[in-house]
Length: 345
Image: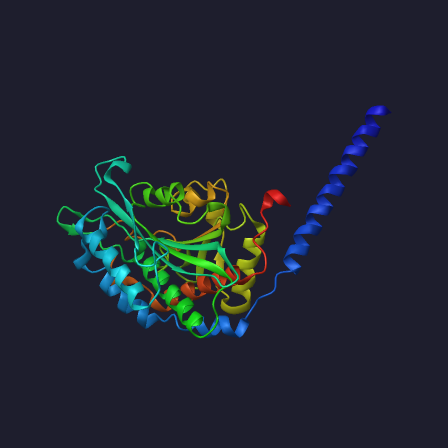
């Protein structure tokens, strides 16, 4: 009789805890309101397929020699990114004009020469110490057997999307819509050799990681994988709910309100054999309990091949995906409070 009573009490306590948790989740979801709806779309529309195409045809050209970390092509790519930000009057967070975060040769585990992350920054108007990081790696595989590995999708697509997103935020700032929080745009080097650029940043952060509210990481968003050949209006999202269910809800709300892409969470499964959650730069932020979203179109026949060229990118789709990321970033940069972490629920 005593044992039965204990079991009954435990069952009741467990049931109540589950109900309270479900209620809290529902309350969080109900409290998510889209801010500045018309303004979001006004500036999202400045991200265009034609500008993305112009940037990517240059960025994935033979001129940059496949952008292998530490090699001349990567240096040329870094200077291209720096020049873009200077032209747009988007400053660096490092003494305003130092766009490169230098990484010495001694840091790398293999024989890679010294390299650099590229950083640009828009300061927040109300909470400048709180920082939203948008990222994309800009390196690729270089030249192998005399063949240039252009990396148009991997990760030229993410690189030029980040440039266009930064340009949209800057135009909004110039028009009087400065974000509440600061936004840091980081182009990471050395992703292809083990996420080394992002690891270096998280070990040597320009801004306190405790004040970094989230990382939205873009790695391959210009192509269509075989799974979605008949329904290309999609994007894989990975990591959205692992550290903050609120982040997942905000992402869903932005998409449903404006873009209606099919958000595919197949690779967010913790048992995913591909382990994509651990394979791009967002993971170094997740390791520090910073909520992340990894945007990804899936692998295709040109993945890590010299045939990953700019002519194979779907620029209309790239535009739409970049606009979704911009809209999500706008919401995160302008929401009243930091994201609610799962561990605090």
